[in-house]
Image 1 (cartoon, rainbow, N blue to C red):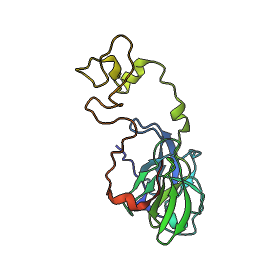
Image 2: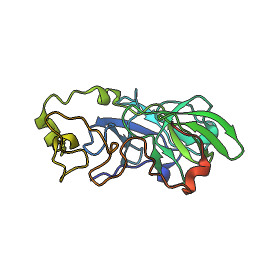
Image 3: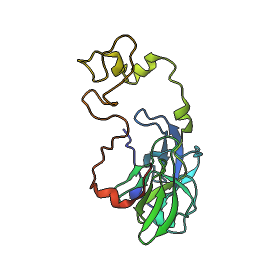
Image 4: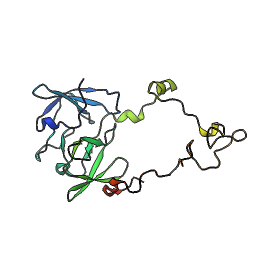
Length: 217
């Protein structure tokens, strides 16, 4: 079985040909099967607009064309270019902006870091020696798909969700009441009492706070 790779790091500066765009049940984006001149085959996330027969390259060099599907260091990608599948740590592989239709944008470069605006609106610092792929992740119609029926949700492993207000008081803090009653007090909470609307669960001293210039909210 061929494995998904984030970057063709063992085949840098070697052009690969796209031989197929395939469905992957484990992610929302499509994947592209690449074939190298030595007949090695590997998968990448398929960006929007990539077609069978196209040639793409992963490189650490500066003089590589800014073309959809090419994988470059952030310091060689012009500001304003849409990118996806971005590394957070050099050599670790892409970790963010990988779902269908998503893309980020380089806002500026300062010192050793690039200012990247993520799909959520958050602006984050990422080192310039990290890689990213040019373009927007493909399969942009994924979010517009209508599931159509409850059975299809079950095929995907999603089971029915019962509202707290429809339960008894013994089962949920929102339960009980005479007839059709609203949620009332306590304020919206989970079955175990955790506040459910607007309560922040992020650690106050999380290590990555220093890399976030602007929050998504």
